[in-house]
Amino acid sequence: MSDKRRSPRMDCFLRGVMILAAGARRLPCEIHDLSRFGARISPVPDVDIPDNFTLEVPRRHINEEVCVVRRGEHDLGVEFKNAI
Image (cartoon, rainbow, N blue to C red; front, side, top):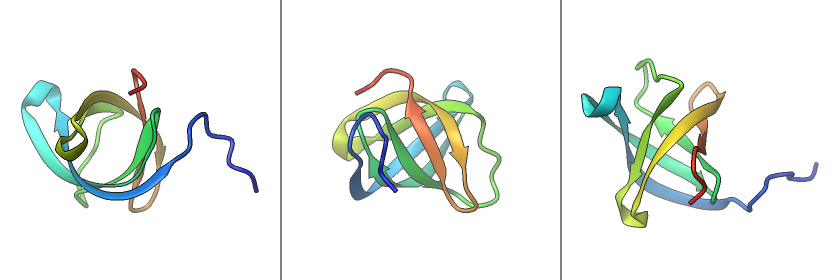
């Protein structure tokens, strides 16, 4: 099966923060794949994650609004609202 993504994914293991409700709640997450257009992340288990939030990845100087495009059993696929 071929990968039809707009930009190649880069496997990684980075720590991130999901910023919910205009900064009222900050939850840790792990980033497993990263591209110019999105990421695959593992959020804290048993927490309701909204469709839109801010993803912060300090080691990559990323602080971007994202929307959830896929929800898996243990991970989320998110798309950056503005490509990085």
